[in-house]
Image (cartoon, rainbow, N blue to C red):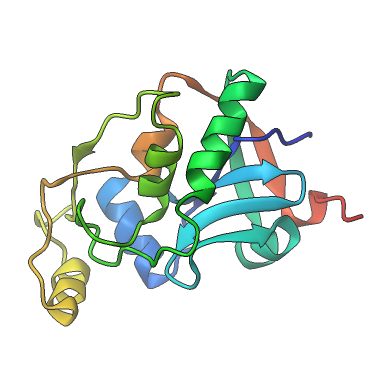
Length: 180
């Protein structure tokens, strides 16, 4: 399988506490990254903020990703990557508030694809099967010292994967990577 510039790598739930909370509130995809080229991605993560990583290093941490692709021209692909890279070195947006200085993963994707694809924002959800705000998120935001941004406009990887202009290409695993 050949990756293309501006492909999106959607990461399924790895069953860690944060992944479980995200998946319970929004759906199975808990992270998304943008392919720069066959060797690099850019994403926003709690560990690194907005940064470019080597593909090999990224997959060593996540193991598997579902690939989605928009039908873009080379000019549009370059625009997406340029817009994504313009946010490099920004911190991670731990609060998920829309006007935070940092960015979370799907927020970076939305900004990178601005003026190329329409990625609608959704009211942000933090609930589970029992309550509109799960205990995980109540504790998370209590530690941050801010209110839960319930119903604030935002994005999440699962809803992003349903963008009509994105097509599922296949799945890529760590062992599938060709390393030069």
